[in-house]
Length: 364
Image 1: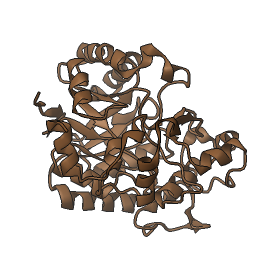
Image 2: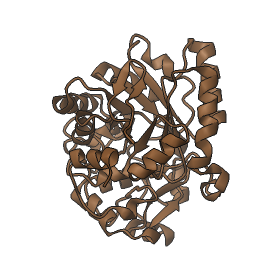
Image 3: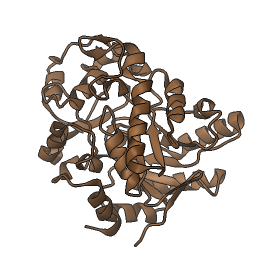
Image 4: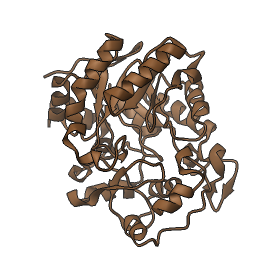
């Protein structure tokens, strides 16, 4: 089976594979630029850009961590990441992933548009006001991430009423993805919430609003066979994150890649998160410390996500997500938080993005 290109707004993605946005520092210029260059859609994560190039673009630090929202996220760094990705992929479509849960969401969306992102992808909440922040950028395509047909219906209804537009595409993320889930802990294991049972209802909902709203399936997709299966259910493309960590070009620290290469199936677990959603990652030294309530100090230096309520939720779950994800970015095996999809344990080699794209489109 050969795959049709994926149309998102005015952009054509030659190979219908979207690389998931992974922060902090997993998918920045090298990974996103390389995926777009090879015909997929590279996605830059806008989370924690203050850490880019060893905090080169940060104005204020406390204990070597970016102080508050304005420094944890850096506009200068995001623009540099997009610029460097462009040096790799040229004028091929390039996306930015901006979490709805972050502080300053609207500002970051606008910054990404000004920096030259062609497509904005948003999850971790219902982005009912997303179009508000892209006024003046009519060519920028908008792609929300949902976990149900109901969520898509709410977004479409609000966007149409307020902004006279609807999403250019939608990503349907099932409960086997890495990082934060759009489900309760219990739902993540229930049959009716598995990705394969959600694709058809979401495709049906999308068709109520437009003949040109492709549904992109995400969460637990690993190889060409999985992609073909999602297409057979009605998806027009897929999003994959964890598999791209196993590439030379991935911006993740070598220790991060090694954590996945060493992981066994039982090491991939669901854990509580200060963001308020369950999160999937690898059981490491940090998770043992948190279970014993002996984790690192929680000081909320970066003030990264609104649902954490300035560190209150972090204290409840036992870790600060900004500090622990940035530790993983620096390869700290003692206190780093290493997110992974449910299939992360299947990673057994590091290959080039070019080779991975060939495997995904042509078979092993």
